[in-house]
Image (tube, rainbow, N blue to C red; front, side):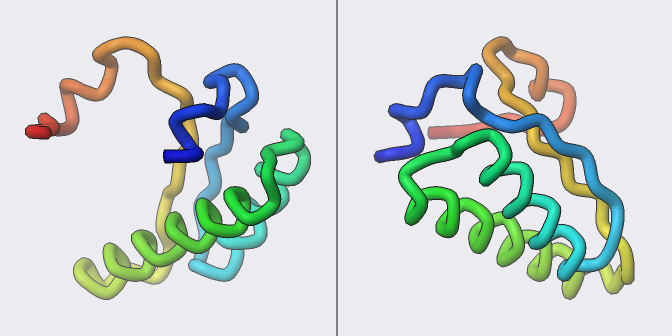
Length: 85
């Protein structure tokens, strides 16, 4: 997958609270400011994050969401979930 080839250091850090429109604009701006390339990958990632945010929002019925983008290279997320691949 193309995303696997992107160095973790080039991934933007972002924390945004708001509606889906604000989340899309913020994620898109953060990826562009970081020089995230190729452009189609930036578009795909922005769209995917917003798609997941909408699914979550529809499920829980909230108006505002918190979205964080962070590159994790250790086992920091083990407190929140377990991936079974």
